[in-house]
Length: 350
Image 1 (tube, rainbow, N blue to C red):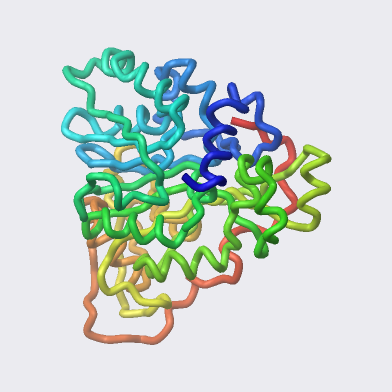
Image 2 (image 1 turned 60 degrees about the vertical axis):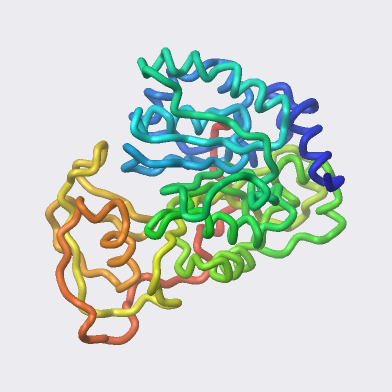
């Protein structure tokens, strides 16, 4: 195993006993979970919660019956949340390489089965390195959804992780994950710092490199769902990173044929029915597409496909065709896909 992987195992298996041992808030979820997720979190075993090191909310809507893979599942918190949401007809598999984290997750499988009143457990945990997903016995196109929470930054070959995720997804499936990004490329010297790497900082991708990697893997139109500037309060670490800025960002990447590099206008529109559980008033596809219930909304061709060719199709009415192209679709662009802010005043950790 690579030295960097061994350092990560040691950091999350031995150095960190709980979230209180983290030296920054990079590996902490700042945003408050929605009500239905919070209700499930309140049912999760306290030991699982104590060893949670995620940086975002990686549980999208409309999960019932799905087959889900969690890359870097840690103590299993997100897997157990997904386990509740997919129901007995769904399944969740968590992959992690740290023995101590896997031991916590496996210890509490039966606890959550009983907590959710299931006849059988629908979650399992597999030891594995997300840099080597091709070495695990997962069939191609066998998952509806892949999630990951502040772990891909720890991978050495991030391009391969994204390519493997694309391969494992079913057509119309999605990779929905939170991670840490930087506003510029991080020096090799900082990448060699084991604490900075373990704290999810020096392994962070420059956001523009991530977009290239995602598109190279087949995810043509990455969509930012929510973002938050990371405020580093540890003075020693702040001095090390200097002017680097970091962001916690949640992305959704769909495996869809025919997505275009730019948002193109075909005169199409959609109308949300208000039928997604937990979203009766409106539905957010990403951070710049909000669909109020009953309102006709014009959309670009890519957004049309993200709704029409995925599990969300039954919740929308669709209007228009592909017969006429009207040029570029205004309103979907932007430069850096998240807010360039100094940090969040009063941001809470985990």
